[in-house]
Every structure is written in C-alpha cells, then in structure tokens.
Length: 251
Ligand code: NAI
Image (cartoon, rainbow, N blue to C red; front, side, top):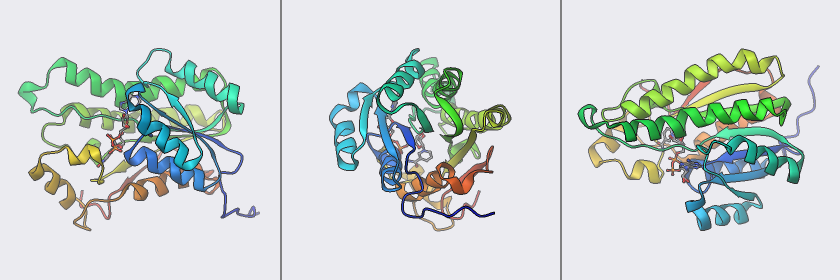
C-alpha cells in the first residue's frame, strides 16, 4: 500500500547532520533539509567560525565546530547529537577539499590531506556512528563524490582518487548497512558554482562547465535537492547508488 506523503515536511522528526556546511553545497543542503522539516546540525572546521554560525542562524540549525579528520570526530558528533536530539537519522558527508597539482608535483602532503578529508573521514565517521548505535534503523548516509571520480581531471589525481574511492566505499558499505535498515547513496556533482570552483584556473573552469550538456555550471540547489531525495521516505528502497548531478552529463 502507498503511505500518505507529507510533501510539506518529508523530514519532519528527523535529525540530519551536514558536514562542511558553512558555505557552498553544504550550506544549501542544510537549508533544503530545514525547509523539509528536519532538525539540522551544521558542522564545519573551527576556522569556519562566523560563516558557520551565520548559516546555522539563517535556517534555525545548530552549529558544531568539527574537523571531520579528527580521530574523535565520530564520537564528538555522536555525543553532541545524542545529548541534544537523541540521535542521528541522516548524515551527509559533504566536507571536501581540493589540493591540485600536476603529477610530478603531487607531494605526499597534498595527497594525504585530500584522501583524509574526502575519503577516510566519511568512512571513519559512518562506521563510528553505526558502531555506537547512534545511526539507527531507517537511517540515511549520503556521500558526496564528484564527476572527477568518474572521469579524471588533470591535476586532480588525489581528488579523483578520493572521489572514486567514495563510490567504491558506498558500494561496499551498502549491503552491510542494509542489514541494519540503513541506506547509503552518493551524488557525483559536475561543475557547481561555489568558492571551490571559483578557485580553479579559468581554462579548467570552462572545461568543467562544458562537461554538462547544459554547457553551464550547476547550482548548489541542484545537488541539495537530489540529496534531499536520498534523505526522504521516497527513497526507502534505494541504496548503493551514485547519481550524477551535472545537467545532462556528457561524460
Ligand atoms: P566549498 O569549498 O565551498 O565548501 C566546503 C566546506 O567544507 C567548507 O566550508 C570547508 O570549511 C569545509 N571543510 C573542509 N575541510 C573540512 C574538514 N576537515 N572538516 C569539516 N569541514 C571541512 O566546496 P563545495 O564546492 O561546496 O563542495 C562541497 C562538496 O562537494 C565537496 O565534497 C566537494 O568535493 C564536492 N563537489 C563539489 C563540486 C563543485 O563543482 N563545487 C563538484 C563535485 C563535488
């Protein structure tokens, strides 16, 4: 039978965490979740300070200064969410960084920092939250991959590897989380207009835009609405998927 849909607030009663939410795609994900009725925790590095509290205040969310790479990140997040809201229903691993260099100059520091933030942290936090029983039956994990993890970009061996790794991780975690009634999916955005892409050299930036059949960059809301679907009851039976969000991708 078809359950009645609550179109106004499909996430009512849900506690959602968005990492890297001070600005860009993460801030818009948090805004869409708040619109959909969720109780939202926005997390970002301590240096994000004022930007994070501004994002939180704008949408009535709760801010948490949290570096996702910290060894105790899962524990801190679990304790914070449990004390205030009794647990977590939805976690979006959106925090991400680039440290681009062509192959010859791709030093260990750049490699490790990108792999740590983009790939190791989501894994550590998901497994930590599940092990602690904070993410329960009906829970949702949504990872942010990238089109750069499907088709490589020059200068992004670290970033491409981390985002391809996210896809492999989602595939592998899906059947395990299914045993606990938790879904996991990923989005692979194309070129989205944010501070991250504004920092890309102009030629590469144009090439990024041209990877979409719309021949222009996407907006943060395009990604956020797809993530909202993975968070909503409409996707109860959907797990282990990667959805490209980049206009109609030419890749
Ligand atoms: P952004 O640079 O505007 O925002 C990223 C946020 O993550 C920042 O607020 C930053 O402080 C935070 N962050 C960085 N390291 C962190 C850490 N260790 N702990 C907690 N927070 C941390 O980037 P944007 O464009 O909004 O990207 C968001 C996600 O989407 C990233 O995972 C990125 O790789 C991914 N993505 C972005 C695309 C784009 O075209 N903008 C395309 C495909 C994927």
